[in-house]
Image 1 (cartoon, helix red, strand yellow):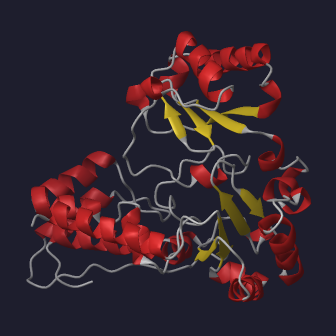
Image 2: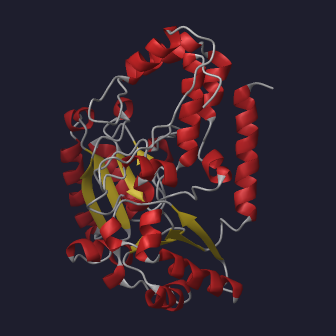
Image 3: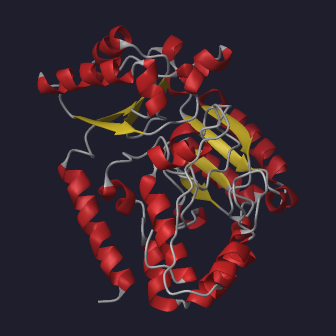
Length: 359
């Protein structure tokens, strides 16, 4: 069996394992359990939710997550429900956790004053007041394709249809989908619409935003390793314009679950490399990508791999440099704690590229 086929099989098994643990419950609750969150008191918060689960909290899936990136608002808790924009709570303590269980989990009452958006800037929580969150890409390709004008048309059409009070529109950073622009993402559901025109905008308003039915002919089937962090946190001002790559899974998945990583296409890149690329081709691909080190020097990764591959000797090592020399920087810890399998997969690909047998 080819490596890509093996990974696809493992992904299917992981999805079944996650579903078997209750992932498709009516509500999913995630509690931040990175070191920064634990220092802020998240262990006690998790214990409150675990106790409620043992007492028979129905149709709820509880899991941990890595650091989201708002250390000043920790501990954080997300309540994710089908058909609604996820609600993100900040500065959660044991008392607030009990209230979230009683009011939100059991009685569907969002507590806006504890949400990240309210704690950030005093705005009302989007999940309780808006039905749709709509992001238009403002990358160069989409702007050239008139994404700002299309957003204006959508707002006007929503006003004519009487649903303007149910939507929130905003520009996002580049979504990395330049070939299908202009691009618009509609949440809940992360519906990606591409090749937008004034006519398709009017049809999307009439069918999706008014009648709640996605317009299939304008949807884009995206299977890229994209910024899935946006699906949960993209409605917040602090996160809405971020294009996360290394940190795309951080704060979203359980970092200690390989099933979570495989379910989100983890290790597919490694399988593809082993199946169809030589070591030299991997090095050249990394060179072309422009990838650089995250330290102050920003040394080109492809050049570093090329030098190592050409070096003499039969034993080579790949070392994960997890030094946190800059106080409060947390750039390495965020990836290692929040999505460790991304680090491991990168080390494996790097080892293949440079001829290392140990890491």
